[in-house]
Amino acid sequence: MIHLKGLLGILFAAVMVMTIAAPAAMADSTVPLPSPAKAFKGKQCVEPADVMRRQHMTFLNHQRDETMRQGIRGNKYSLQQCINCHATADPKIMGGTVRTLQPFCGECHEYAAVNIDCFACHNPTAPLETSENMPLDKMIAAHLGQGNPDVSSGKAGGAQ
Amino acid sequence: MNSSKPFDAAKRRLLSGAAAVAGMAIAPGVTLIAPAEARKAGEAASDKVRWGLLIDANKCDAGCDDCVVACRTENGWQGHDRPATDPQWIRKVNLKDNKTGATLSLPVMCQHCENPPCVDVCPTGASMRRADGIVLVDRHICIGCRYCMMACPYKARSFVHENTSGQKPHMPRGKGTVESCTLCAHRIDVGGTPACVEACGQKAGKEAMMFGDLNDPNSAISKELAKRATTRLRADLGLVPGVHYRGL
Image (cartoon, rainbow over all chains, first blue to last red):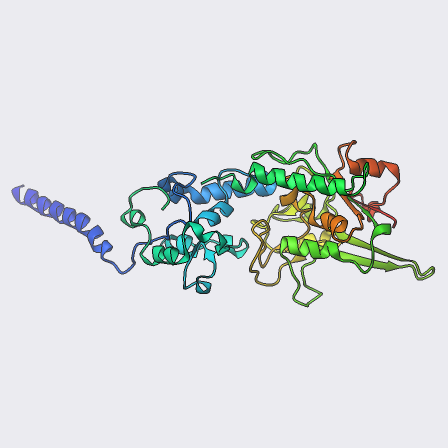
């Protein structure tokens, strides 16, 4: 009995060590965490960032049907509004001459192996002309500077 | 961040103001472009309204394609010099009576039928009729089978064969889906008129096209329809198109 108890204790300890050690090992893996670009403008999204992160696809899917099929316009969740705020310029995309959603959406979708087809039809670009809010070099720096530390650390925060 | 920005009140006032100016510019008492009433944000299209067009072929000139150009510019479709497969939301049809030599020119687009055969045949429900009578393709669920193109007796729909880029924000279009005239639903929803109607009146100065609510007996289009008989293309098919023609 004593031997069995000791064996169980060792097994328990081994399982605990593996459980604790595994995430640490994963954190060191070769896939870096996504770092979405900071928003082009605006400080707060239509919902808190953690809600948007989990549910943006549901919001957009729901509203797309309402707008397309019932003609309801001007509701809260709009793909166009995503583009207005979140499209940023990146020197790797068309030489940084347009704002696109790739630096924002593409980061997480690539990480999560999600393949969306919104932009097979919707134009993901926006003109740079409203860039007085944030000059081009700042936008590029925002992206290249590994974006939003809140997202990287998993902390919830406003749209940044 | 203001989620209602694309449809804010200032823009709506501007649009309805522009439509009102267009309406007044013609002549006192004659309003060919009847401004549509903008729906409130969050309000669905209603079946109390039935949008339609009246096209007067007598005023239409064979050499003019301003309506086609306006549609192309507004909605961002263009050809690739391949007439058999190029998109064609609106086209000019020129006819000649060989016996008398008389010619006739008219624009033909989606006729926005009350009983649309394109909706009947669609296997996914992508081809649909909105409550206010506008027949649309929901390209989110269109699989590109093109049954609707075969079913349409007006040859109103086309298939996107090419990769698209530079689409207008209000008019997404993509390869592998079917598309057609939307009656400029994005303009109507904020109180505007279709681009072709606007161009015919303002740019070409012909005023051969009229847009309005067929259900409202007091609308300019209804009053005009009541004055003299009009024709609907292939009325024998019983599709009850929303587009009326005069002078055929």
